[in-house]
Length: 116
Image 1 (cartoon, rainbow, N blue to C red):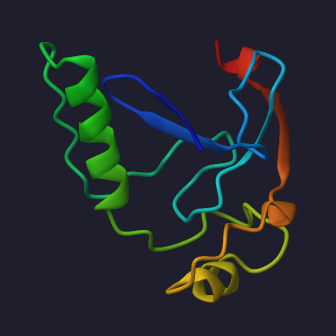
Image 2 (cartoon, rainbow, N blue to C red):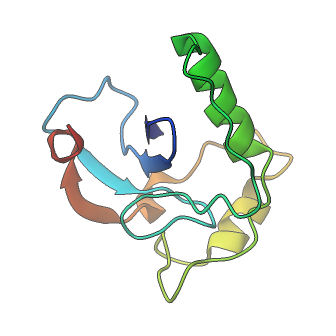
């Protein structure tokens, strides 16, 4: 998973390999609910409060907390972030040691360079 954040917003993307990304690494849609097609996360009712004085570690921890402790309630529009049913993929993984099936990831025609 690749995170792209500033003080006010978060975008997330999936990576199809475990290798360190380069500027040419293809990005995929993140396989979660509440993600717009451009990767931005709909934070719903989450109050984002990142202090100007936050260290890099505090910044990262804040976004992780906002993301993973928010409610993933719905797909946005008609956009499905994966090939197949997002709910079923996650249900099949709950309580298992199975890795996420990368074959269901959908490319979004972006690379890391497009974000930088």
